[in-house]
Image 1 (tube, rainbow, N blue to C red):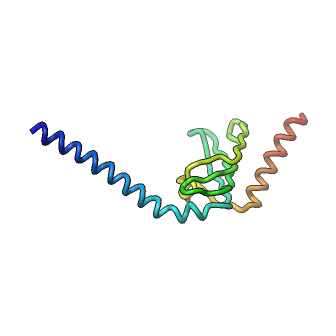
Image 2 (image 1 turned 45 degrees about the vertical axis):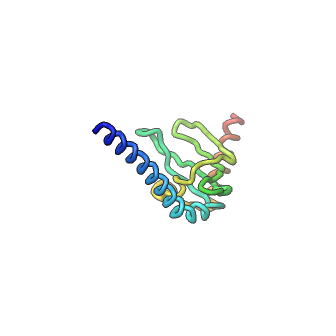
Image 3 (image 1 turned 90 degrees about the vertical axis):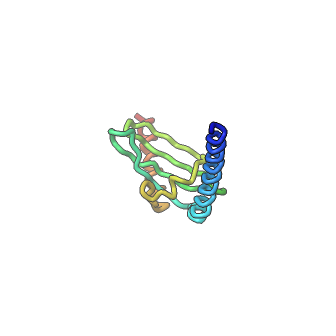
Length: 126
């Protein structure tokens, strides 16, 4: 009986691994066109540390390769910490999740970027 149980557990583990591989392939087939269409688009998403204030993270999709994207992004968090990221590689999953990401125009992205840079320059002059 022990050999039977051991063999069944091994078989279940093998099938589980195969099923996960099939699910991953299905995901790629379904999402690949959406991911490829991201190049050149602009997004913002609402971020927070949990119970505190929210802020926007702005992102420009520079390029897409396979299921990965390269982005420029910037933000000023609720604690006045400013962060810029250039040509950073990231996964595509968050950009195909339209519940978190809001597509914006290049002008909105540029205006927000310029406003943040002006704020930094203003702080340095004080």
